[in-house]
Length: 206
Image (cartoon, rainbow, N blue to C red; front, side, top):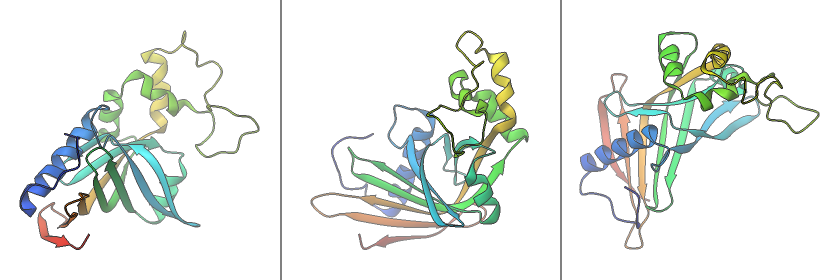
């Protein structure tokens, strides 16, 4: 659905529906816009941003997902402060989504196990790192153990990484859409309750 920059569909309801449809598409295919985004957490030294892959979105329940390692610093940050923020941008369409919510860490539970089973073999490699993400290393390294080579890399071997796998859920409380266009930008904000119901929908000055 990316292409030339365009004005949004008419009406706030239509914008909200398009936003969630695009996020769901981004979470379902690496070829879709919004498949990668910026995830923000709050650490001891202030805000921390990183690019992550959108692994799922559900407009009905107002949730979006990514995957991470239980040893990642972001897990400790979220344990201290579960507030989380996302920014996703489609340069071709000049369309930006920002989302805020509360993070829920799924580790070694039914949701994590189901998402691990749905994770393709090649994407499981990173969960075999010999040290936690962000650890200092004396050499440039991908962090993987030397015994993890292509010959040994099988579905059975990959299961060793399941213990480090986290399905990180964000329950969205606010979603903002910004359409950039030479004829005039448009910006809208939606707020959601704990049950996912839309509480308010407002136009904002871009």
